Image (cartoon, rainbow, N blue to C red):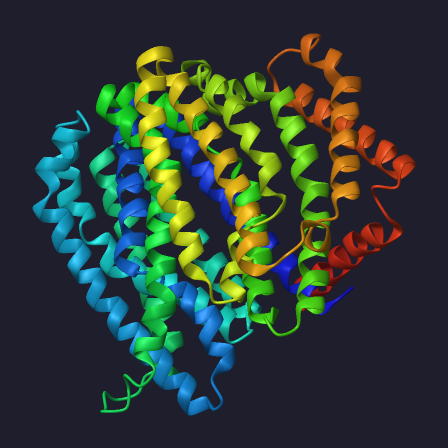
Length: 487
């Protein structure tokens, strides 16, 4: 097994654990507080996840590009220290903005209770901005193990503090305080670990800062536009409906987080190892990543579509059964996630293309969401996002040919991808009857999922989709993980 596959696998494993714990917290909150309170809680994180990207200007992502290029340890320290100082300043600015705009936000979200919660939550970015930076620093230094350890620490803090507070108090205000306490502990961890990279402010600290900004600002703008493009349906639902309806919509209207975790982990490992001057090597890396991603993305999309209703009812309760409708619509985005298209433009330093694509997606999604919501209600918002996302990817593929001179056949294993999609579809067809002869309980969901995985594996082996290499890769990753646990 290659070292890059090991690193991506380790990051994916820790991020899957993060997803599991975050999901556990979300499920617990759905059962411990009212739908209106859950809607308010989710709106807090919607605000942060969207607008924090705007203020960070893509600076964290720039670490993956610039840190490997630093010639000396002193340059690395100066680069990291400068980035930490800038990020800390931006976190204070964000906190002030949240506090000053709390009443306006609550009004626009049709949720008066949100204003008092934002007074507490305004402190959150001051702590969490630096913790976000920590993982990028470690990945830029090619130390994914340190990033994985921090992820585990952060997840355990959230689990103990947030879920514990929710279980014993059922008080939303105290739960938000618990979120803040967890963020503070993560900030403390990051500050201690990054202390060795701190250098005193000097005249040469900002050498190269212009180059960093020229790389990161288009990336940051494209990120905020991209996130707004994806999240605009939730903002518009908040504007058209109350927090109770938003809670139901937001639970279902999401891309499968497992796929986002996989893509982010793979990209975090690939980008520092992709060199624009070595197109053959870049092609091999990217093509291999697409094929492996497809082996997970397609079967997961089919399996979750098959069991969407029982999964939602089992996890969140009958109150949130309606979320399955939006969840199934969003699953139509998953086939696109076998690749991350912007990473190629990042590797070539063409981040403006990402920005233009994201800008198109935002404008198109706002227009489509408005008319689709008017015509079809909340489901219209989900369909609008799916449609615009597909168009956005088509534009990316066209731009690869025009801007980078890339031929799709060199970077996408088209035959393998199509066979994998066929395998996922055949396995779903074979398991389809099970969906209608079982009740909504965990044992039947597990049995159904197991049957699907077995069908996918057998058909995949017969069609040559799953190779001996893939079997060895999984076995080696399990063995490697076991050895790390024993240590």
